[in-house]
Length: 254
Image (cartoon, one colour):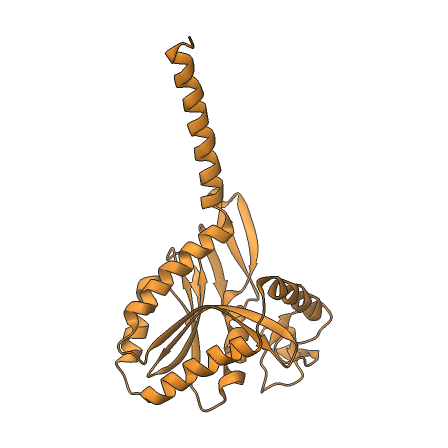
């Protein structure tokens, strides 16, 4: 008969092993991102004030101009307009502003630094696509929300914490109506019908991301397909879209 102490040790080792596996899957970037998106989705639904307010989560939209796609975390439709929201569940300290193309994430007391593409620039591409689908008469704006609220070192009017996002949307939704109830429903149906008409799978979207990165490297605008040309600006030289001011995509000069 196996001694109870041996059974207890084996059982304890199995529990530790199982705990390690669960922590691994729980802390993966994909899982952390989904948790953050689910949390923000709940906030957006609480901001709905009527049956004509709508929330669309995790929508992939096809860009006909450059034959690519964009995955948008959330779209909130209310009487003030259409809000395009990018959710980030980053930990650590984040440094960035509206002008920078690359932001810095600092972890482990400063020992680990990671460069990340500006979520403000990322969301600007999403806003541009939504505007191209809905037309110029529909007001479209956007926010980037950091789930963990670590925005102390981010200098951007488009970035907010979850509580700030809720406050902003509730305030906007109580202000002057820019869309009627009928228009809100039309916007929702237009976006859903467009998504269904130009259906894009997750695998196809990943391929589009690789294509977009390749296009940017080749100085092709990922928003409209125009050419990225060298320009002089307030902060030095940069690459800007040849279709400016209609398209305001820019790329840093390395």
